[in-house]
Image 1 (tube, rainbow, N blue to C red):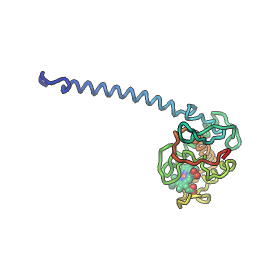
Image 2 (cartoon, rainbow, N blue to C red):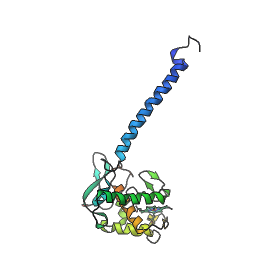
Image 3 (cartoon, helix red, strand yellow):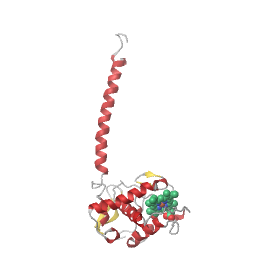
Image 4 (cartoon, rainbow, N blue to C red):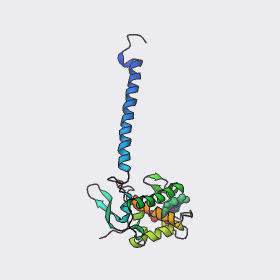
Length: 200
Ligand code: HEC
């Protein structure tokens, strides 16, 4: 390199720039990672603690935000039993593990991840097609344990295969889906119409 190279064309300048930019971006990435982890942890502002499955969850239109947001209502324990935080976590976890092990995402979408062959499961707990709220838990279990006989297909002609889910696993899945429906997803999935709400 000759001495009369202008500073911005010097190799040394670009080497230092690369090091500083990489270091700077790494720090930004770390800060954002910690911030994201905080915001997606159960028990934070938008992601309720697992014991939320002890309460009624419904949707309400938020005028300011322009879409529906989940609301945590009165006590409405899942399967009629109030759970402690630990018990609720264990049950939701059972469901989450089953969903992962059976690869439900091959056909379904959960929180934006997965496929679009079958209905989005993010708000499946609030899907009006379960009919009345009181019978929903039981219908979901029946469906999960025998999706072919209980197929609804929604006019698509597609049926969910029997994945030989046990009753215990089905209960976990229902808990997982109930908890997931309470997450504030900024209106995702867009245009979702929830189960009939009080006062409708
Ligand atoms: C091979 C594809 C496929 C896989 C894998 C699959 N499903 Fe489905 N699922 C479907 C189809 C198709 C439907 C819609 C038809 C119906 O409801 O009868 C459906 C419907 C559902 C519904 C009803 C959704 C609603 O809002 O009413 C739930 C809940 C559900 N599946 C849960 C699961 C879970 C949990 C798993 C994993 C354990 C799973 N599915 C794996 C294809 C699949």
